[in-house]
Image (spheres, rainbow over the protein chains, first blue to last red):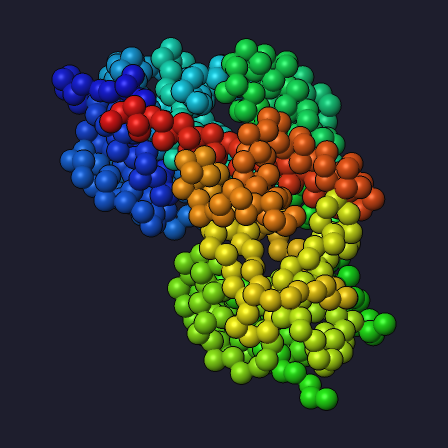
Length: 304
Length: 283
């Protein structure tokens, strides 16, 4: 399935360290590490997995494993950036369900070795794979993501989930892609993860709704990062998130061109958005209290 | 006329949020036995403090766990009532049970009606109500059919329907609720794979149509999994055909959540079948 990610370890190790954050990734971690053989310094920051993740990771000579109790995503990521000593100045940030193909490995090595780079971080594109195919449109390709960094010049923003790095300096661009197999560990795992993410997003959304709508002009900001965040914050005021997200991914972004895989991907994302909206409603209208009151009433009614 | 004695069995796993209230509620009916699957949230102690007899056993599956309880708990009563931790017996139902069991009858098992309380409202439409479950029976007359999830109870003898209703409280967070849906969908899709491969312990085709329940199960197993657009049908069925809209906002949300559940089963089933065929072609 992941034949494109097989890596030959012929060239000498590049001057690049890699970090992977894990929790129960036994299905992914082996293939992920094998594709990273260009680095002689791979660090796993594990949130105390209860499966074979750590055991598998330790079986590679170029891997070091650290464990830290997971609290929030940004703290875990900032720990990985700032509290781990890396061998090299450049750090590639990888997830267990991602695979680095050979062309990206070459580009990363070349970028890290060129001494005259004025950038402190690099961003790149990725390809989402579902049901054996690249769901190009449904997953809004191309999306930039910062993955190659000088760890001391970058930190993650304080946010519930879906955190972005804040870079102290300029950001360069890479041409090659990585592959993202979000469904490798099984769909039940994907649902469970998005159940968690939607809870965090709902908490974030309720906080943002309490502050009122973001200023309209931020929607037209020249900085795409600010623009994206402003759109995201405005979206918490929307009714029918799931429906609009589906329209956006499937119709506007042409997700229908990706066949059945594209349709299901769009539906799953819509379902995730629906969960966020419903969880915001749950928090704001306090379902639990309402239910307890009703039950109390029904249990004290005298028999008829 | 003697008053028949009732034993209540409550199977649990991490029900600290409910159990003290459930046990207190069940004690109005009879002796309470909590069959716990080694909870890690202190359910056992809370149950004991509330006045229940607690027995622990590692969880296997829902049917097996409850059947084990029926065979091994030190029951002494004439009747057994099986109550889940998120259910409550209303004073009305309790009174009707006592009245009914006091009369002599050849009935061995009673179906109990159950109403869901969700988002602060009783849900009385959408096909969720009435919901009849065989929960009260003469000791030794009923068992669960072996199945991983959505197990059914089979009673050896005459059955009848009890008036009054119990409450099914949906008060866990939506996150917990979805967690359950995801787990059930995973198990349910395993069942679908088994039906597809013909490995299920199913009655012979001749016995299928003997009663309505068997027919419904046959449709569930052999027709429903092959129907395209199931999530949409599930929603339409609940919200329109079964008048879910009469329950207002909670009815709308429940119908959508059930459509999500249906969708997850379908996607999981598809992935599992695909993996099986990949494994086969790799051999």
